[in-house]
Length: 295
Image (cartoon, rainbow, N blue to C red; front, top):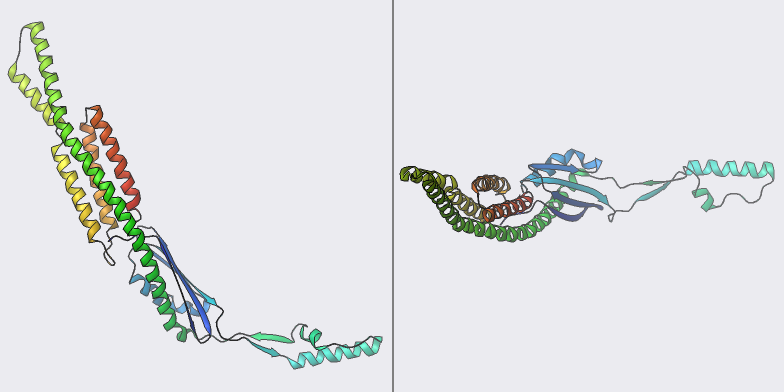
């Protein structure tokens, strides 16, 4: 089953009282363009995270973001008693010198700069890597699940459009025979008109012209190749899976289908056939838009 290149996954973990949140998101891209954003304390482990994600994804522009979140660890508070004492002595001197009222209370003292400071929990990056690696895998699997679900929808739509392409090919085949017959009849009428005007009819030349016209209008080979490419396209869709991306091959087959459609269009001397060729090219363009998002 094919996979889309658009997806999103999220996972959370905690270790040593430190919480981590991992988000993995991807959009379509010709190759695998992987970017990892880590907190500064984990920056040295970027290569390891990239390697884990590369093992599961083949194409797409992928962004992995890891953020620190509040965990169970408590932030400790320290009071600098030396600074507090200096504030108190200064307050007492001012009160005595200027006859001021009551001195500093505890709340006012703690609010003064430098008296209280918070001490963050020290983060052990090596200890975090095990839980973080599991969270990255979980988020990536969630992304893959979303890509698979969208890929299933893409597959259904592509199969439906391929059915229409095959139906158009069948109508080309039926109409092509009529076009050749009409060309043959037109040439014979022209020859008969010339015979009436000058009294001559070169049957050998007429036969040669009919053969040339039939060869010029014949689209049998193009239709055989077109049907073959459609069959290969279907087979490629069904062979897709994790670790087996098919987007580039589908894109190549679309190029071949477009080439055959152009050739048929160049040979289409019949208005209804030309209209069907336009519809065929429209269907191929719609398929191309969807294939751009296939891994």
